Image (cartoon, rainbow, N blue to C red; front, side, top):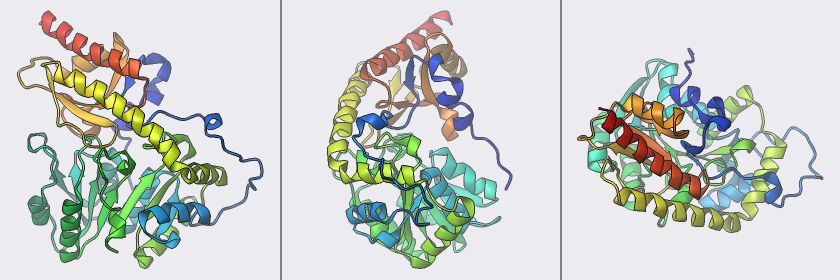
Length: 370
């Protein structure tokens, strides 16, 4: 495999240095949590090699909520390795995969790095980012090994209904292929979330992690879920050859956190809703940006209106260099830089408000110069 660094990683805020950013609206997760605030007890933890599948109790907690069995869950070092394991287990050079686009960069780049033939299911702004099953049906061929989707969607915050999900799975089963469903933002769905995709068919693989909804990216815990025993054995073999097992410290933190998930998640949802109202009010009271209103997650993918004649590159440069405000640029998702992702629940609410004002200030400043 010939690895190439992705723009989203090259330009990540942690690489730029958080000290150089005042208003960080580029993040795609809830606020990072402090270990001391979680009330956990790790003093009696034995620092051993853990079960290669992941701590049994942790897998049981995850599986119970998803209406699955513990053996249907494989703990990984975050969602990115989980996605990598699935892609490399399914795909060889020349194999065909269908991937939704825009998308989290790993879902786009890893199949290409493998040398797979990638067809894109384009998620279109002007269609409200609605899943087009007719288009997907035409993209799937007899040689399609995998279909890769993300819901709630990153970077747009679009969601899928239970009816759409069941129709999608029927299509996957009819076409005799497999569905990889990245459901990392599922707990951030604004309304009632549909069933976990992997609970509905053994041709579905669901991915999630502790990073986005819970603000715990530092513990590097994610998981793969599938009812397909043969697939799970293959995924376990891949895990063992890449990193054998997880950190028992990380697994124990995840386990203790998820035991009290309802209490933790209530605070998360309240903060997300508060910040979403701030963002929605902002969008409703300006005239230069447009969006498809998110229905889940903690990110929005906005774009400059067509009639706004400014240099997108200069916009991002001035926004960061002069106003110290950072957003997720469109090219991170292989889109034009007139699009940009706003993460609205990582930084403090007052920083979100300030950053949104800075965005308008830069647009007005550049237009006045022209």
